[in-house]
Image (cartoon, rainbow, N blue to C red; front, side):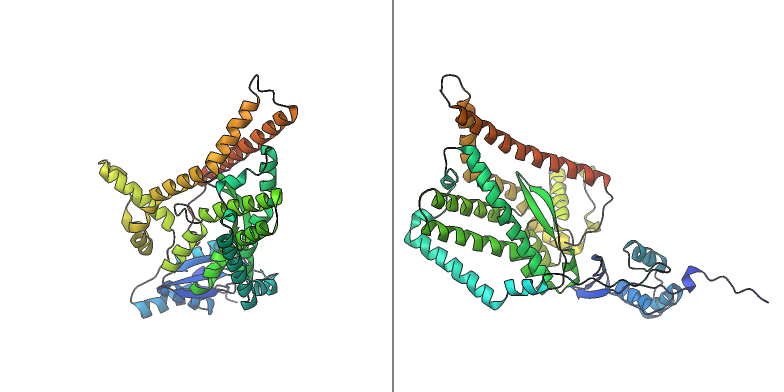
Length: 401
């Protein structure tokens, strides 16, 4: 009895997980919702993947591609990429279905027409309050609401935690209403610690539906600032000063979103509207090319033809925002929290000076304040150093924002 001929991998059909296909701007995003793994394919590459998912063997898909497009495709490379992305089901692996996303109903309620009406009324109320009482407009001086600097730091930190959480919750809920999961992590922004929400699943939805999840955090900040100003108008003394301090710190966090040299919410919005892939990296490299040309270091130029064409076009103007962004962010620091905290740091050191007659409570307050202040700066520097080391060791990945 004859033995069956051995079949090569090109003669066996692939078994793929359920995939989503999203056509956008002449490209097709393909991915798995359950693992939130996505990649961008050209239209012909996406058509080839569809052929494989329909049951064609790699050899049959290659023949179909040649008949359709007039050239031979390297289907082996495509299959390898699909395996690396986790799109191919291993032998004996059961089909996985995406788990239901929690809090979808809450997300729809938070961004319902009734909720938007409430947000608008709150913002209008705050504007009217400031117009009637200009002293309620938050300013840097409102940060010093107590003679005890450690108390100021602890209060602002304790209050900032839930406010930052609300910012991130709005991002997450705006995504979850679309069935998108989210993850959060600690990071840094120039000179402050921040919390970031990852919504990788946005790559699998229509572009117009991505805008609200991107901007939802800023909506939360505006509502929180308005509520703090309104509360300051209804209270007096220390409580009112604390409310204005909270409003000002929230305003500073809102301003961070406009530091376009960082990957902020506004940056993500711009890249989404333009259909960019990695505008930040392209802009940095284009700016470096300009500097190297100016200095005559042509051997250090990066080949611009390797960049995504959309990124390359946008980087021609966006790259100029990188140095401007540093100037704007530094100016914001010097105008906002910088002078206030420098005065507090100086006054804290003065309390340890001889002949000032500082009480033990003042000395303890100064010590705690200095530890908290420099501890946060040190932690931010440590995070920056850790991420830099990781980026050096990690292999370059194509990331969809």
